[in-house]
Length: 92
Image 1 (cartoon, rainbow, N blue to C red):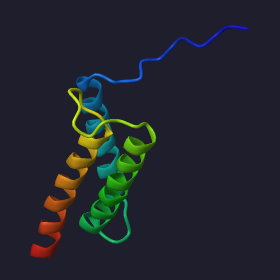
Image 2 (image 1 turned 180 degrees about the vertical axis):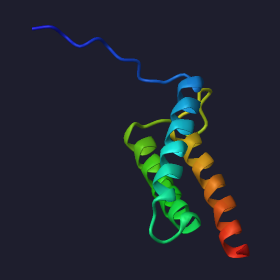
Image 3 (image 1 turned 45 degrees about the vertical axis):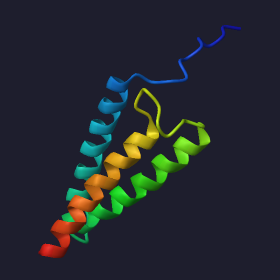
């Protein structure tokens, strides 16, 4: 039986940035088709992404302040985007 190759435990920072950008694009596409409006849909999806990133960072036991980007840094990015979208939603 063929064995699976050992995958690296850590991703490079470039891979994490690409993953963040790809997930943000997917969230925006889903928010466009949301029935409660773009802003509210994006806020809800970003909130869920914050929670999922925190859970994944905990499960994978990633250090919050590591030299390479990880799920904790991704969580902070989602939180920043959530704050931005929420402030626009309140202004409208």
